[in-house]
Length: 117
Image (cartoon, rainbow, N blue to C red; front, side):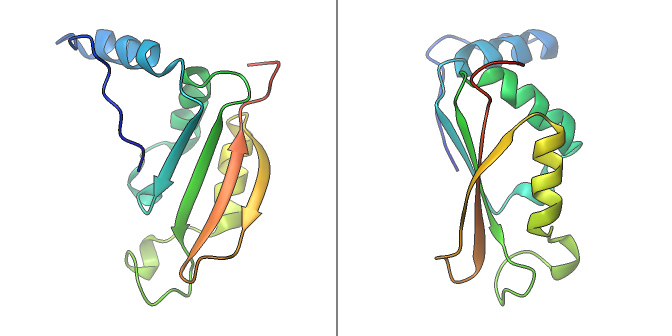
């Protein structure tokens, strides 16, 4: 998971916190998600908002447990790669890479379009 702290103090108001986080992340080039995808509520909305936080051409990498993996979250909580691709594409991201070198996870890379939203 990508960890980064904005050097400016965080406001107490939730709406202001979201605006603050968005401003802090505006320069991000890449965000990685490792094994937490099923914990994100309303993923399509989340990734649409995340797209606005990425610079044009910025990438999101989703690394998540395969459906048949002996490790990871409960099988009922896992999400198939086709479903992840569909959610991110509906949110406006473009799938650019798919890797199969990890033994228990799939690895998908999406990009914020250079032009557009």
